[in-house]
Length: 269
Image (cartoon, rainbow, N blue to C red; front, side, top):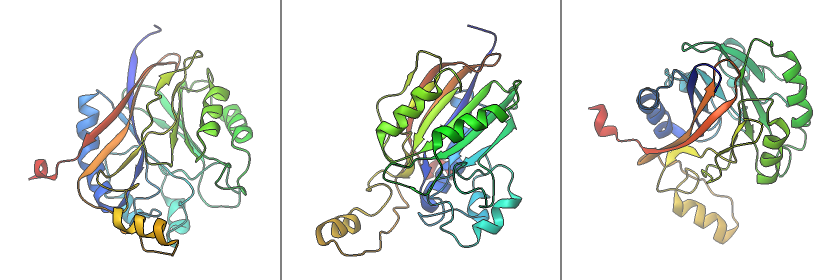
């Protein structure tokens, strides 16, 4: 092991107001529990279950970096707002004319910098997006050599594409963390080159739901094939993600610990 080991927290897709409340309450607790000084959260569904905006992001003050995905522009006000928010990333492999940025480096209070990259998949998703593999390669050439910790949020549908990205970046980044499916997978591991990986980190959303949406609404849509409003479940929230432990001097991951805890609003009283 090379030098000090630091921990960072990563949480999967935040769904709705219940998810925002859970993040605001749970991030400080989880940071303390796992001795983390840095937190990354995918917030692309935090505004009423689809999209994000400045008002909603402000309700989650304990988060150091927000990542996103295919719903990043669902709120009409956000393209104007994102330019003024330094710690929010949109997928780097979207069109270069779109506002915002796809990666940046941030200071970790515990020591060193953390480069965070937001990418989106192409398989079953955004066929108009640029190649995420080529984009990742290009970004790595731009990150200063002094930045050892690099975390990639790969927002993708296909497990094969996520696994391929993890293998492609093994030894080049600290972690490749999948988001988008809202279901935490049981494959958290450290790859041979020292990169932590999980196919999907899960979500911060209703435990008694289907991907954060009302069960009956989703069943009705599946059974009838008709358009339907899928209400967001705002209660009984489960907070899911991972804790990455990595070497400060090398950025090499030494462990990845899945997190899955219920948010109890009674503790806020």
